[in-house]
Image (cartoon, rainbow, N blue to C red; front, side):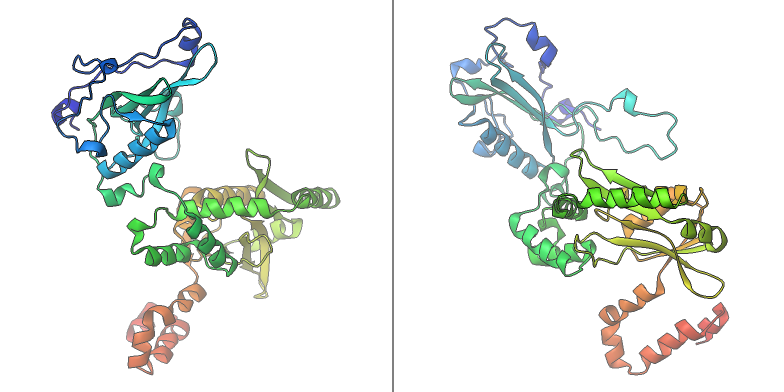
Length: 411
C-alpha cells in the first residue's frame, strides 16, 4: 500500500485530546488549531490544496453554520472520493461542557485493539478494516460558527469507485419510501432477498438502492420487536417456564436485546428431543413460514420416523433472517439435541443460512429442498415450457422417477 506521501500529500500532524486529558486542562480551554504549511487559520486565510475542486472539497478555514453541516459536507465528499467516515474525537469546554471541536476520520483510521485479536480463535480471523489511515477533517467552534482547522487528504489504501461506495456502512440507509415498500412486501410474505430484488429494480440497479439485505433485516427486526404488545413476551416466557416445570425434558431459549426487548426464541419438548436421537440423521430446516401476527419467521426442525410420518425436532421464532440469527439458532438447537449433529440437513436456498450451517455444522452434508427448487421452475423456465410442451412432463419424470445417476443421464 502506498502511504500518504506517495499520493503527493505530506502527512500532517494530528493532535488528539482524550476526555481524561480535558479534565486536566484549565477552565479557559482553547481548542488547538492544527496549522498546515505555516498558515494561520485565525488570519482567515483559506488554504485550498492543489487537488481541490472548489467548494466540493474541504479546506482550512472553511466555515459552517452548524456542526451537523460540517459532518454532512465531509460525508458527501467522502462518498464522491470512495471512502466512509466516522466521528473519532469530540472535545468539550471544561467550564460549561459545551462542544468545542470534532474530528471526523476515515473508517480505516487506527488499528484493531490487541485484546480483540484472540489467538485461540477457532473461526477464521476477520479481515483487518483499520489500517492506520490518516485522512480526516477537524472542525472547531469559532464564535457561533464552526471552522475547519485540520484537513488531511491522503489515504494509505485504495479508494472505492463511487458506485461501490454506496455499500459502505457509513453511506447506507433505508429511506422512508423504501420502509413503506419493505413493510408492504413483508406483510405479503415476500422474503428479504425478493424485497432486495424489488428495491433494485425500483432504483435502477443494486448500486442505487442505498442499502443491503442486512439493513432490511435490521429494519424489519426493529419493527417486529415494536409490534409485541405489552406483556406478550412476558406471557410467552411464563408459558415456557410453566412447561418446563410440568415437563422436565422441555427446553427453551430466548434472546434479549440491549433494550430488554425479546428477540429470537427456540423451544423443544422432551418427545422431540427423544425422537431426534433415533430419527435425526436427516433434518429439514425451513424458514419460509411467515404466518404469525408478529411477522416473525417460524422455523421448524423436522424429520421422518420409521412410519414415514413427519416429526418435529424443535421450533423457533426469529427476529430476522440474518446469519447471526441462524448461527444462534443452530447452536441453541444442537445444544438442546445433546450436541449431536445430523448427517444431512435440507434447507431452502439462503446464503445466510448456508453460511451458518458451515460454521455450526461443518461435518453435516447440506442439501437444498427439492420442493423449493421446483417452485422456481415456472419463473426461470417459462420460455422453455412454452417452446417445448412435453418438457415439463419429461423433466419431472427425470427428477421423480429415476433413482440412479445412470438412469437420470439416460433420460
